[in-house]
Amino acid sequence: MLLRNPVNTSAGCRSKYSAKHASRSLTTQASQRPLYIPNKIDDPNYIRIFDTTLRDGEQSPGATMTSQEKLDVARQLSKLGVDIIEAGFPMSSPDDFEAVYAIAKEVGNDVHPDGYAPVICGLSRTKFQDLDRAWDAVKYAKYPRVHTFLATSEIHMKYKLKMTPQQVIDNAVAAVKHLRELGCNDIEFSPEDAGRSDPAFLYEVLGAVIQAGATTLNIPDTTGWNLPHEFGGLIEKLRKNTSGADKVIFSTHCQNDLGLATANSLAGALAGARQIECTINGIGERAGNASLEEIVMAIALRGDQQMNGLRTGIHPVHIYPTSKMVMDYSGMMVQPHKAIVGANAFAHESGIHQDGMLKNRNTYEIMTPESIGLSRNPEDAGIVLGKLSGRNALGSRLKSLGYDLSGEELDDVFKRFKALAEVKKGISDEDIVALMSDEVHQAQTVWELLDLQVVCGTMGMPTATLQMKGPDGITRMGVGVGTGPVDAAYKAVDSLVRVEADLIDYSVNSVSEGIEALATTRVVIKPAGRLSAVSEHASLGKVQRSFSGQGSHEDIVVASARAYTHALNKMIGWMSSRQSSPSSGSKTTSTTASSVTSTSVRNSSRSAPATVSGKAVAA
Ligand SMILES: CC(=O)SCCNC(=O)CCNC(=O)[C@H](O)C(C)(C)COP(=O)(O)OP(=O)(O)OC[C@H]1O[C@@H](n2cnc3c(N)ncnc32)[C@H](O)[C@@H]1OP(=O)(O)O
Ligand SMILES: CC(C)C(=O)C(=O)O
Ligand SMILES: [Mg+2]
Image 1: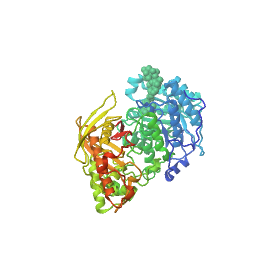
Image 2: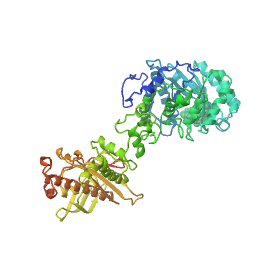
Image 3: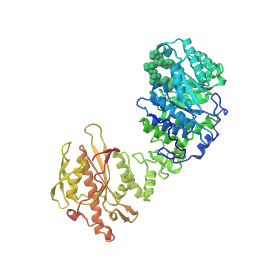
Image 4: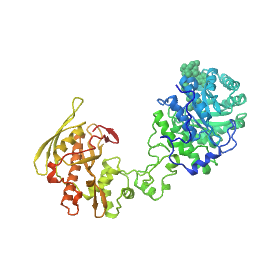
């Protein structure tokens, strides 16, 4: 239940959904928002953005939000600058009534310094009881609106409503008149399933509701059936043939069943619609609705050139924080390649694109991430290193990590980078640093893992027993008890090898498919202790020391133990070379390949969660 007098949050208050960057060029659009008059807009190029995330968006299966969450989203939509917030369907439940009511009272009266306050709208069937409830929920807003609808397609009238076309006209007109009698002067009417309705019948229904007092006519393509030219054509025909069309605003409401919701909405706007109904992240019934961020950015970026100067009052810099909030609250995560707000929308993985991005960001980005409120490290240009990356991208990342390489040196690291990227999906900075360490010291076999047996399950602590051949050629047996099977195996290795190491990174990839897939495990370790982590290299200067190891096996624990042993061997080899080098002096630890049995074991990161393809698992 919501408080009747919710605390008003100040516009300047920062939360985790606040935009970190301001976009100069794109925010100025919003400053000339025309004065709100329900049935007309003084600027012929101005498109009203009607956000229905809290109504149609909430109709996405599983996306219901609490009334408190709806209020938070409404506040955020007001920051974003949407013209109309459809806050819910008040008749649907007491909780939804309360949410719409609270949003109307608070957000609907939060007048911004430029005079803007969002219109707060509630949806209603044509039944008087619903209409009364909707009006009661919104009427305290500065600009209240009720949106009523009735289906007009043959199939809906006949099978769903069981009404004749004349009954549909009569009910629609009665609903609009009833709203007028209640004192509502901002009335939206939707002929549901207009996209599959007979246009001639639509002229009749729409003409009748205009006469009864409707101010906005919303044309829903309820089943996402229309193609862009078809939907644009429908808007054009309706504007031309409906009596009184010039006295109202036409609106689009496009569902996304064929993935055409954004294209259809823009086609509608080009044909004269001046309100677009959409949702954050495109959530909504079935395949969703037209996505607000796509529409707004298409108009912001191409409105001048391709849409005769169309514009909106949205502040794009709040798009990303709003998208994130809606994902968090609704539980509906967008796919990585979702336009504008997907995780990959500003990421570049292939070498040719990365090279272009490093030379000029306009080569592959049509907007900046900052313009939609997404912060990105300015140095990395969204570059994600992987199997398809090239030398320029790797060189640039190395540079940002402190290694200035070119020519043969870069070629060398690049070869090993490609080999690693074949088996590991995400290449982290730790991996790159380890590759550099690998270059300055290649592994030699000091300790060899011969056999490993792990006992684990829900009864008792996981225990590992193993056999390893040491630097002296003698085979020894080690035992370890750990929090998980991998931890136990590492403790067993430690019990024999006895060097101080911190585990920095652990990852597992399966390199073949199926239940018997081969697991490739990769670990990155560094010598424990501050001094031993850095040394000088003739051509590279100061080099951060870390050592990677890789191991493959059908058994993930064996693969992990092999990887760890491999990394330890590299580290031991490096330590012994430091000890024998006259320049290494006091920086080296006392541990060498020949003294490994006398040093104590410390591994501060061992209990940290390890990752399997990016997800946390107990090692
Ligand atoms: C295209 C759209 O997105 S439309 C909006 C869809 N959103 C929702 O439905 C969410 C909210 N809905 C609800 O909570 C419930 O459906 C309620 C409270 C509105 C109605 O619940 P109930 O009274 O139990 O009816 P129920 O949902 O089972 O059936 C809908 C009834 O409304 C009728 N109806 C459908 N649309 C309309 C309309 N626009 N105007 C009048 N009646 C309508 C149907 O014909 C059906 O009537 P019947 O009971 O005589 O057969
Ligand atoms: C209520 C109406 C506008 C709707 O959501 C639809 O037809 O898709
Ligand atoms: Mg809809």
